[in-house]
Length: 346
Length: 248
Image 1: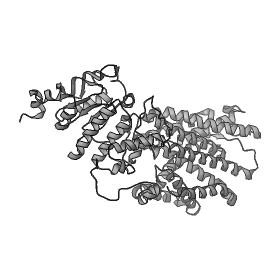
Image 2: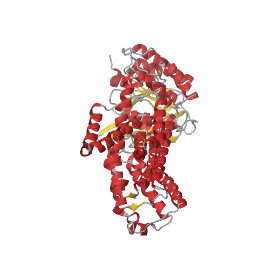
Image 3: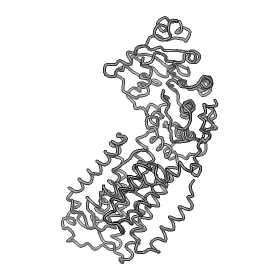
Image 4: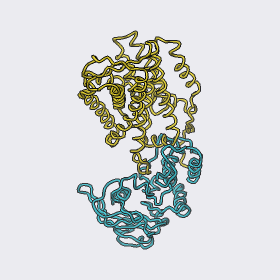
């Protein structure tokens, strides 16, 4: 395999030392881990199973709203709270805040698991582009439904409870949550794909009809894969809502044109269907995004668009995919280099 | 236990105006090798697809070990222990041979395999043993899509054996395989039947193969069951000769 030790050391150092060395970039690096999580969990169905979902952002938004609702409604009447448009200035004690936050994040994760299992029953009957459009439809529908729900503030959103810690510790606290979630997601995925699950996922990608003919309960595998993605997307959504401090459906909870597309773009850039592709893709993408944001503000989306087009037209296998075809031995892949098509020695 | 593993009674299937199968009845004996022959387009593959649940049948009944299966889905039927191979060989082309084998383990309720089972140990040994059985051991770590067509056919056969099915439906196992390899394949089919106790049902165009292999043969023509019987009897049946074998 690739030099994984080096990658783990490098990323581990960045994860632990990053906010210490560059304290002013703490939230930036937190966002980096969030993008790594998004791309990696997207890849479970998108890369490894060939089910390109454009709707994983649904779980991000639903998780965010579930968590916010729980955090607020544990101590206030949610409808009154949101109807006051921020006039109620809540004061949360530390126990109230952290209790609500932990409960909120967990509830976000598990409610997204249940949601993904239910939606999965419907959308996993679709294949190829129809699945992509179907899941996109789910995300758009979720966004519109939340926009009309008055209890959670409708289009006006919810002001989140404020973290009862000194301001300079705030970034670091959320940074730790993001990093921990990304690491947990990474190792969950790594473990899953080291078992028979990984082979079944790839079998579904290569030939789903054959997989069914061999008796693999394909729907169950697809649902489980998506549920794991939904769990982590729900959790990170809950955390992001608290970082943001204020949530609303259109741009923060269900950001289809940004994070919804970015997570796919990042996985494609790094190489979909690989463990490290989405991680590397997310890091590169985030760097390009933030650099252009800082130095080429008006050009940011043009640069990102060019990266995307070059990636899709000329470089479909992505960085890790390209390395895999170039140096297959490093990845433990054997290629018959003799070139002669042997006719079987049976 | 009944002697017939699969019982097909009066099965009909049409696609629009095309009557692919009309009133077909046949049975597959437990432990035996049953053959199906007939001209191209006579409905053999449609019959296979009906049996394994690819499409609903219009009427009739299909039972497996005495239980009606005509309403079940493809993967449910496969988990009962009835497996099919494809005329156009189908393998998982981007995975290597061992991985292809390992994911082909039985998914029946009684099997030890679970969703997150380890890939090492006994399962890997069995995969390698079966690859050796079909003569692909030296290719075990190659990406299966890079194998030749004949080798892919062998791999597909080995994958089916990995699943330990009760009955295996083979759709033209020797099509596109060179003559020397065919002998090896026949030998392996027979050994799978005798040593592993797998009941076989084979669609085949190669008369030398099927007449040698099968103990009972059904001949289809224009979607109807034309004749059936022992190979010798069928070879001399004027209707079969007329419709299929050619009267020269």
